[in-house]
Length: 229
Length: 219
Image 1 (cartoon, chains in turn brown, blue):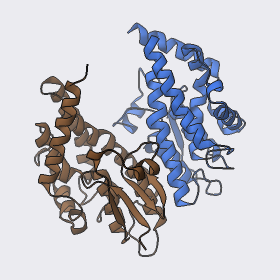
Image 2 (tube, helix red, strand yellow):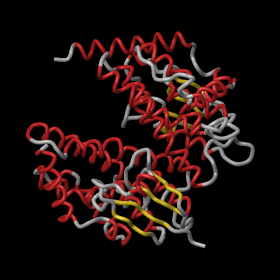
Image 3 (cartoon, chains in turn purple, orange):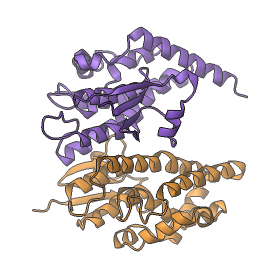
Image 4 (cartoon, chains in turn purple, brown):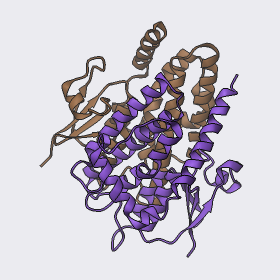
């Protein structure tokens, strides 16, 4: 035992999605916390020399990087029998799950981040508008379903799982509004159901910690931008 | 009971080429439909309403979008005796990681390089070569990225080779000099019928790039 480790930060929901996957599979693991304020550890640079980013899964010393790649790895290595299934079996359904996961990361996460970072005024307005359009697509995907995975949570729920916990924090730190229960009723219901699941919520740090971290990062980014020649 | 396979495509698209190669590797008959991207067909807009981009694979009327997702779908649906992805979970993860690298780094570097001129072009060339060198490092002395067999990472990267000549002329550099092992790998891949049939002629592509560059610079 003790051969599965995640190079990890509790502040990153890309990392949390990996932890969720391991818990769903019933696997034991260790968290190696990377302090993002202190610069990158030797272990991180050695394990992910290409991107130098977390999360990295270490399986008996072998490193796997990129959160969605890690999720598929976990699903494929521990499959069959009693193991929980993350991705659907049917190739077409799998393609759909992958498509929406990519969309959720490329458009929703990125969009919300941009809207948070953007300076007040036209830039911010536009970023918010674009992100709302992206979320509208996600709303349509969850309409009529309890979870993205169907009756039970799956790969896409884990990928979208940042929304109930981090979106509100981004909105508060960034002074903008993307989400409300009226505009996205199905997403709202999904968010409530998803965030209530014990193994999901026990991996997420308290909201005020996330907010504190986000505010600090934002102010850091802004001062870097202000100091640019 | 074969269901109809349609590929909505655009001949210079590297992403379209990936889908073509994968279908041909599996021996799947398909109807390749050329899109005019300045006047997108109702079918394209219906099948890919989110991004409105090619390639789109339509299998039995159902669309699959995004080239790497299409290639995985093709791999999982047809020709299980000749898989593009390896069977070992770690090797699969490695293949997915590197295909993602091609999209994240190499394609991005290419997009920066294309319209650039002067000093910006020099910097963009350097980035592009650096990203190709990383791939070359990953290839090492292997015949293909997956080892002995042509596979997923090869499919994701080989389309970029069709653009090499045009880029070299337009930006005045030699990719072969900078990355000889990678070019040797590309030439090896071009021996495969699926690849040779799916990549357009490099001179035709150069003309296309020239025309596009002129248009972009005029804007």
